Image 1: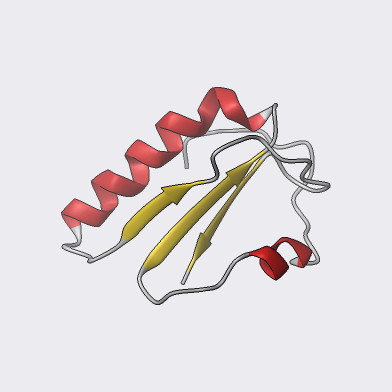
Image 2: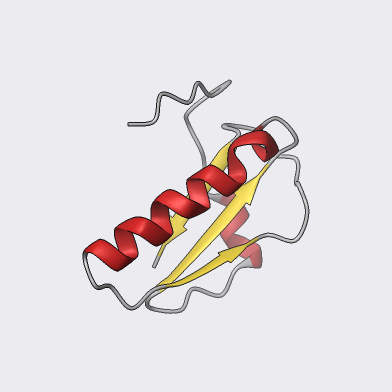
Length: 77
């Protein structure tokens, strides 16, 4: 919707091995290329959360990781 271009779009979801899903949590992971759009993506999620009155806890991975596919991943549980 925002027009971000990713270097790739597929995933095998191996990144979920390190995350313990909790209902109502949004977890954002990113690589160094995705870092430049990270805050805008988070703001869009926060705006949508407020607009739809959703009880979501938005968390960002504390550092860039080596995503093999894509630049930002938004995992919604």
